[in-house]
Structure formats: structure tokens, C-alpha cells
Length: 484
Ligand code: URP
Ligand code: ZN
Ligand code: ZN
Ligand code: ZN
Image (cartoon, rainbow, N blue to C red; front, side, top):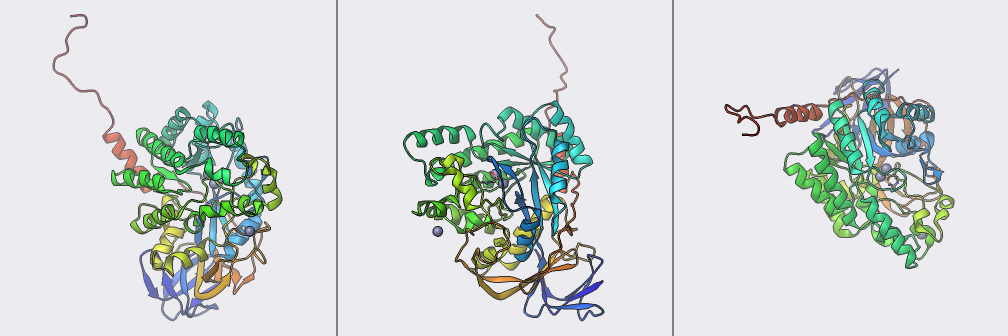
């Protein structure tokens, strides 16, 4: 089947120009003026961009005694409705579980995906088995990124010795370590102290995770990665302290990427002071929403290039699930949604305000992610030969975000009431039109797993540099005899 996207303006990470796009067999086969010979999609007045890639989602994730409610079906449907055509989920072995067994479980869940997807592997425990299986994960399973939690003490958290060992293993395999950077020991202490003082509401979640816990852990992870000779991807960068550590590292030539979330860019800590318990608890996530100064820092980072991508960390729990934490904020499942809203919110609050150019928008929602995760230009590009994961973006289409009619399976939306201008007219996943003028035509199971090779250009360059600058014994002319 051949489809021609007609009369649009192509916007990529580095170019803006008028051209039609021909799609055959799920890939882009021609780009140029006046193309014909297939079904036509009218892109008049629209921008034709690479579909969004969300590098950080948790679909049907086992967490805090429950499962996140959006699964691979509803989650990817929500993504497509908002112009996102690929997600990367986290395969999460339980402590002691084989990494390969965990992949099998994630393979089973993801068969329902409506768009393409990939996995990061989480390192939730450490041992010889994990060390050995990491090689199979990279070389056979097509996963080149490993997430480490410095928070969630007693559950997912790893210690510094494990972190260093795993980072070294990643470097040797040409893979990229990722880190959830919050100091889990300090959070555990602060949480106990707050509860003992009678601070048990959702606002105490924010009190228990000040920006210092994130700044400290980010800097620690950066330094450990540097010593291990690894690059580092810092997930959900939410504050100036963490951004500052990333900025400084990048200025010093370290290969570090920061990932702000659309939630942290557009929602602030006052949400936790709402006198409706449900309202506040629905917004409990880690790290918590922060104040305007931190938000300004994140926007500045996207503008300056010290922060590289925008994600959602989509991990959606219903109000009922959130209520597990009534009387004890530490039991509120951590996570918020955002898959359907990331692109329209970033366009409205980023491009329409003049903070970001359209090309920067494409870079941080798609192209940079595809490059860092080593799947460019199959993904993240409008180029001949690339997968036809495309969004035809109508800058004049408006809506007010509401849980009513959203694709996500939960009963609320953290962006409720926000007016957005800039929405998909069409979203295409590997050549299939999944969203057409608000009409959802997704096909369960259409999504395919995207294998990602190790040794991305940056990883390869870094390992060459580390090899050349590794400690070597000094060749001496005279060595005194021992004991003299
Ligand atoms: O609160 C959050 N972020 N929940 C999802 C798990 C994680 O830490 O990324
Ligand atoms: Zn996290
Ligand atoms: Zn409310
Ligand atoms: Zn996450």
C-alpha cells in the first residue's frame, strides 16, 4: 500500500522545508515536490515531523504492591493519539530473578502494543548471574541501556559498589547506563521522620525528596560513571541541582544526558498543597513536582542543550490505587501519566511561547532520543529508508485536556483543564494511519520490538578515549633492588 502525505512542511531536527512524503511498506520511499500515486493524506497547513519517541514509560509495571494501570495496549494508544509513535519501557527483574526470564515476561505483555517499542533493562540486584546475563541481553536481545535506581531503598535500590560494577560492565559491553538519581538512604530517613511528626499526607512525599537528594545522587552517579568509563543517561531530571551536575559534567567533556519530564516542565509543587487528598496523591511521583525556579532551569537546559530529551515516565495509577496511601504517604504508588499529552503540552508551552524552535521540539521529542538510544535513522528521522513513524502536526488544532475521552485507562489527568494548541491531524505508525483527525484507528499488536545495537558512536568514542588514557605502568630505566 502506498500513501502520500501531501502539501505539508517537513520539520526535522535540523531542517524546515516544503515537500511531500511517499510511504510504502511501512517505510519512507520518496521525499520531494508533487508526489502522486497512492492514497493521499492532506497535510495543508501542517508540519510533517518524525513521530515522538518516549524513552521512559512503565506499562503494566509491577510496583509498590500493584501494577500500573495503562498496559501496552492503552499506553501506546494514548501515545499515538498525542503524536508519539514509539515507547521504551523498562524490563524490571525482581531481585534475584534472571534478566532473561524478565525479558520473557515483558515480551508477553508487549504483544498488545499499537506502536513500536523497545526495552531498557533494570539492574535491581547484583551478582555473577547478572554480570553474565548482561552480555546476552546486549548481544542477543537488542537492549543496550541499563537502568539503576538509587532510590526505593529495600526494593529496587542498588548500592554504590553495585553501581560501579554494573557501570563498568555496561562500558565493556558498549551499553549505556541510566540512573534514577535520588539518595534512597536520606529519603528513607526523612520519610520516617515526617511520619513520626504526623506528616502523613501526599505533600510529605515532596518534603521527603528535596532537590538536594537528587543533586547529590546525580553528581555521585556522574562521577562513578566517569570512573567506570561509561556514558550516563539521567532519567527524570527535575531540579537545578541535578541539572547543574549534568551541565558541569558536559562542560568537562563527560558523556552525560539529562531527561526532564513534561510534568516537571509544566506542573509545580503547589499541586501537593491542594486540600483535596485525591488531587495531591494523583500527582505523587518521584522526583516530585518542584517550584518555578527549578522549572526555569529545566527550560533553560533544553534551550542551551545541557538537557537533551523530554519524556513522560508514564506510570499511571487509578485514584483507587493511589488511596492505598491514605494515612501513610510512603504507600501512595509513585507515578503519573502523560503519554497522550507530552507533545501537545511541549508544543504549547515550548514552541508557542518561543522557548523552543520547532526543530528543537523535534530534537528533544524524537531525534535526540533515537540517536542516544542508537536507533537513528530507522527512528527519529524523515529520510528515505526510515520507518514511516510520522506525525502530521496541526498547529491550529486546539483542545482542553480532560480525563473525559482520553485514551489512558485511568480516571483522571494531571493536566486536566490545560488548553493546548498544536495536535496531530494524522499519526502514522510504520505506514499505518492510527489517528486521523481525532479518530482512533489503532491496531492492537501492530507494534514491533525494536532491537538496538550496542556501541553507539558516542559509546565507541568514549571507550577509545578511555583506553588511550587508561593508567599504564611507567617504563623506568633504573629500579632499585628491593630492600636496599
Ligand atoms: O514516580 C515514578 N517516577 N514512578 C515510576 C518509577 C520510576 O521511578 O521511574
Ligand atoms: Zn525513576
Ligand atoms: Zn482536583
Ligand atoms: Zn520511571
